[in-house]
Image (cartoon, rainbow, N blue to C red):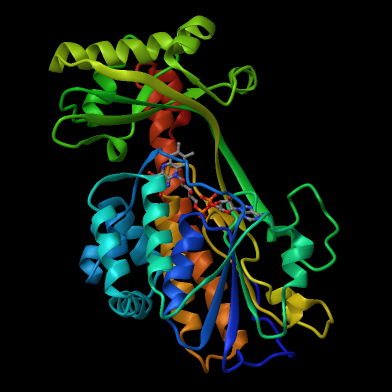
Length: 413
Ligand SMILES: Cc1cc2nc3c(=O)[nH]c(=O)nc-3n(C[C@H](O)[C@H](O)[C@H](O)COP(=O)(O)OP(=O)(O)OC[C@H]3O[C@@H](n4cnc5c(N)ncnc54)[C@H](O)[C@@H]3O)c2cc1C
């Protein structure tokens, strides 16, 4: 891990600090909702979109609302990673901060952690909650913020939190003088695979498990439709199913970003057959029908992190650059991106940790930056281990009918 920054300019936050939150996606809204009620801060939130239109169903992890270390480690795959990476004291501190989260916000988190929810419902709900707290208003600006705007808005002692998502506005600006413009200055990026994400509604209860993934794919020798257990949800009358199909780089490049089932059947019949065979097996088993059309997007599944998630490099020496006098933090997809759909929870977790640091008025800025860097690094290790395991298991699964290919993928020791 990088050494502690040798911060010399500003020792602690001013008695009353301004916080600029760039991007009002789920994580920017969460950061804002957490900081808004702290009386030593005034919060400004900047967002370029006029409306929240992303209706995709997302699922939040139950660890976000855990009240004990045991419930925080409830997912048995994640539990060992957490134990390996975090000290018990750190977990206790995180849970203690969680208990201080205002009840209006906590109630929403509990609701979202129960099952699936459209992404824009989370965004609307957080946005409305922020606006309803009239005793601590947030100044909101509806415009595209450029790097120059972000730098110009800073007064010494201001805090800047970049929540602008995977194409972060400031990630590469956190390395002084790198001069690189290809996105590599401050980003470690691993491409896991290209995939189609296929989502549909089904009019019966469909409960997915690993056996079902195997047996319903028996005839699919090349492309396999793999539903995500944690993204299959029955709401009492309808099952929401999301699955992925691994595709080649050539397939990916020849497809539009978004399309429906018929487009896939017309243009990539082999891929479509794997999906249709799987769905037919579900129908034979549970006698239901697909409701509406299939929604398909093609995405690269990347695992990445910002090597620096704060402006500690700017603060390490005297400089007249505004980042040398104003701490900058990356949160959410700006800081870490994971391929298998855990990112909102990860972003919320980091938002909570950051808010816990900013709440400590007398905490030296150097410590604040170092502790945030360390936390992001640990969350990265956690999601890296989990994502590698998922990818490895998926690779093995796809070769189950071909022992030689399977053996080639095994690395026992
Ligand atoms: C198909 C699919 C399914 C998913 N399912 C899940 C799931 O089940 N669970 C989960 O945890 N995650 C899921 N994810 C990932 C999740 O959607 C993202 O991790 C999450 O949206 C990231 O939140 P964010 O606030 O960090 O960034 P974003 O949601 O990208 O928000 C960034 C915001 O910043 C604004 N912005 C950007 N640049 C500027 C600028 N220059 N000026 C002003 N505003 C700006 C944008 O308009 C946007 O509102 C899924 C992703 C996909 C593609």
